Length: 180
Image 1 (cartoon, rainbow, N blue to C red):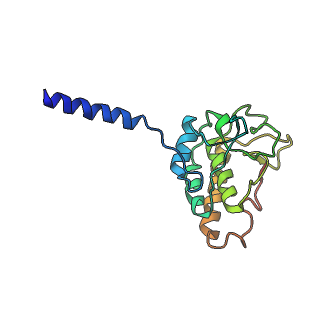
Image 2: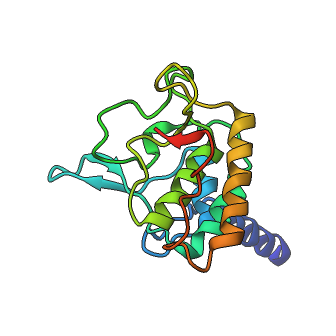
Image 3: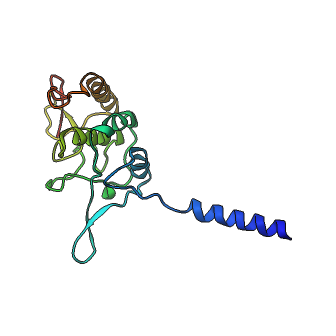
């Protein structure tokens, strides 16, 4: 009987602790946890108004120490499932996705935007998606294959310039892609 009680307490504690949600520390963010929360739609760090209502997701305080990880995770070209919980530039009044991908933003593309945010110390654009500057249609987003290509540019750029980011050219300088 004692063995059954011990087993029951052990199983109950496993269930209770496994249901506990990890909360992201905005001031010292864990990139892996942020990516996991974006992928499963559970990111829940929001600014709130005086009535306690959510008014916008808070961008974690990413900085240069996070850039390599953000670029690393940017190889994931799945779509972010819940865009309502994604931190975006608060001054943008446009929709956060390109015209050819209604309601869809690639996770990797968004993470590159976060990496650029970490390097610049501010939002790199109004919206978190890339465009090909040679395209005729304004606001047309790039493909998953192009996201991986741009990720490679960022990775090579970072490996070359991570010690003097401030003096380096912009990671997208000289290529056909730009933040919208």
